[in-house]
Length: 385
Ligand code: SF4
Image 1 (cartoon, rainbow, N blue to C red):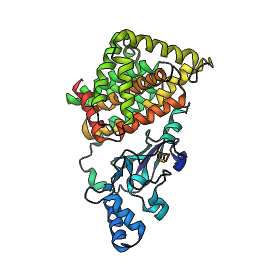
Image 2 (image 1 turned 135 degrees about the vertical axis):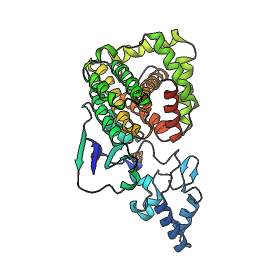
Image 3 (image 1 turned 120 degrees about the vertical axis):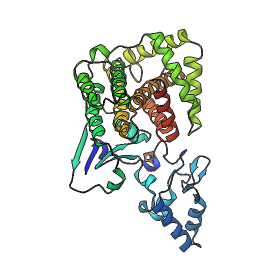
Image 4 (image 1 turned 60 degrees about the vertical axis):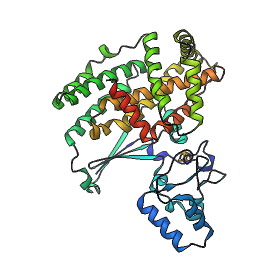
């Protein structure tokens, strides 16, 4: 087996009751079959015990998930602590809670570990980091316990995707180019790779990837102001239509629409230019005049892009949708940028790195934790290829 993880992965520590958010709010937590059976046995056996009654009343036994009370997991108490852990210890958690924010992508003989950007602590670890993200690989001789499930696994495509991802990381982490240029290059690479798949030219994919190790300058074209505005406004439509996991997200979407897009290009341009100057001249917390702030803004965006590419790109082995995997990563960076710009505008033109991290984990919570949203976003991108 091969195991891959980002270099900061093992440093994660849950903030528990000190968490500025809580992972149990807003999501429906699905309970895996083994745990559901364990809970069932416990409830049957200890029927008179008060905690067994509480557990019984907190589980939707038919759907196999925890019930919610006011968009919070029924097991979460007023101190934002999980009563299940308090009463029975961490060993009693279901797989979903046990792992979060750890996320595992499964491929034949390979497990790729990541931390979810939706967790505030994980987001802070990732997005305050100035160094480039590295990936650590370990191997052992153990067979894949899920071997039987990978009978149709397309190893050839996966190898191509892995090679491509290495080149994508080089592009994403090329700090000699602006983040907009890097994203423009990625979108062109995505388009060319997708064409190889759609036209059954899998063997040409290696040539595309090789080409993008050398000749990226010609693709580093950034859209002019008006075209960029049109694209951003067009893409915003899909965010409005997505499922909302938390009501507070509606405030961000509505505010962004009203302040940035509704009144047309001239107003947007004024805000966009001023925000650009704020990032360039004044810095995150306004007023420090540190010339490195532009770079640190770009590094912040680079870390988001790296995260999405690492987590989702190789998943194209299961659906052949390379374009939407890269597109979703690029879109996420673009709209996190837009939501940060709106936040700056709404906070009387003040913005800190912590504000941007908050925007990022709230965005990730809405997008990453709804299969429906991920699918809709990808479908929207594939339809526009
Ligand atoms: S969101 Fe992250 S830090 Fe907060 S309680 Fe959940 S796992 Fe812990």
